[in-house]
Length: 392
Image (cartoon, rainbow, N blue to C red; front, side):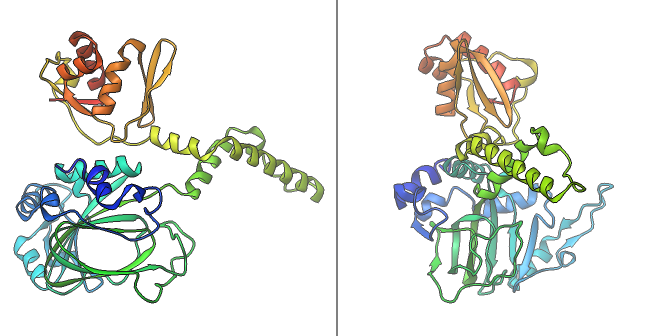
């Protein structure tokens, strides 16, 4: 199973200090075993994805020796729709791969359920949005020059081998995607070097330079990337709140005296400081958790025709990150994707079990919560209409 790859399997392999001390701070290596990662994706599943999905650049693209391969070398214009979407030519793709190109496929977690389950598990562990991209190459060539990523990564080797050198942070620490300077260079030397084999997992922090190349064998790996919350995010959230202040919305006194402009500036600082002190880091994290997006998923016909869930109907909780239940008087509420949902307090046991267990039958949910099957089914009918559960 891949739905506990990070929260259980990886953490058991590297220790409980992964989140508190090592994440984003150092290279982390673990050997989970080839059998552990085999269910994620194999060549048969990859071939099926390429066959059954309309994939084109830039989502599917080729790189070689540090440069993108021109799309016209492996695609052809589409004629089946007015949009004229291009299609991948299999024989041309094979040729480029034989010649040493690296295939990149973005957002595999949106295409393949086992990868989606692992990405969701990672999001529950780090409590940030995550995405999984696929990299495939034959031979000893390379797709990208030495570089750094603007997000943290967990690399999971699926097949074959690949050579890695991690050089560490460059001369600008903690660089960002939206930054004022992208001209910094890599440090001298190497802090970690090795050959990844099936089942190996490597964590490379954001901004750490690395060099990757083939070993003469085939290599297929997934890179699970996630962007952590930074101080810049906190400042942005404080700025959003400043719009509520009438004084801060007022014009700057451009034509007043220097003393009046100075006093205006001091008042701006005072109000800014007060707002910043009221909005702490915990408030930001709770706010982001309440806005955490849901996966796009569908539950037909249940969500439309209001069918009654039966004892053996499976209910799956949709939110990736479990929101805390907010209790107040005669009601209980939870916030998901920026919306607040309120329920009678009597159904709290059903919600608590569903949030904790994530997937179970209606009968199991009723038994665990101590509520009747009728009450449980009533709650599930409301939840499925609001895209909070899937019913199967």
